[in-house]
Amino acid sequence: MLDEAKHQLLKTYISEAEFFETVLAPYLSSMAPGSHLVEVCSGVGLLAMNLAAKGFEVTAFEPQASGFADMHKMRDQITANWSGSIPQVNFRDSSIDNSTRLNRPADYIFAINVIEHVPDYKVLITYALKLKASNGVMRIICPNYAIPYEPHLELPIVFNKSLTWRIFKRRIINSPIENPREFWQDLSWPSQRRLKKTFEELNLRAEFSRDATNFYINRALRDTTFLDRKGKVIGTIIKSFAFVAKHLTKFIPISLVPIIDCRIR
Image (tube, rainbow, N blue to C red; front, side, top):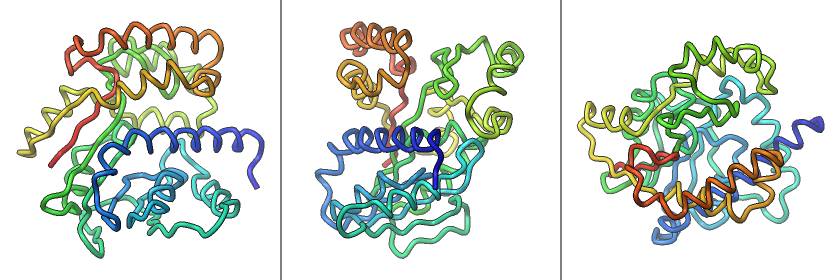
């Protein structure tokens, strides 16, 4: 059983799964039933299950990463309370590495809020792309650390990771995240420019877009549950910034939009 804090966390994961299903929907709606989707680090597995319920074949990888314990327990909780027949997902409780094999190549691979937790995300991307069909797509969505804000711990970035740690060490250690030191050490702080350079080093062609940022802006303007989770003051600030961003985001350089959203074909 999960305690009250874990139940609240589970509610957050459920909300996030529903949100990202809407983010992925415009592309997935054009894919044929039975297309093979691969989720990189699936968390509690709800997004994978929702997509499997829509008729996709889904393989989902979820190792127990620092700061994200109890994912498997929460997945069991979701499965135990699922209404109707449980969607079949090929869950793999492991990371993607050079030995990973699939029964069939992936038509669509997605990594949502993942690579910022991977110290060497270049390696992960390389391994994941080996699973892709020749005409498949890999999509990466994550925070853009060119914006001086750490979203998981909700604190400002002061020049670099080392100085930010020294200034906010006590706050980080006392955060509700499990294993906060490891969590902090694993953060890779990707930016659009760093990611673009990584793709160039791998001789990959990637397309960056504002799509995910626009979804986040609309969420901040309309989703009261999301804003309530942030607290009254922070929620009000986010909504105010979202209102301004809605009118300015198309003029902001792609390297400075708050959410990185890229597709590798």
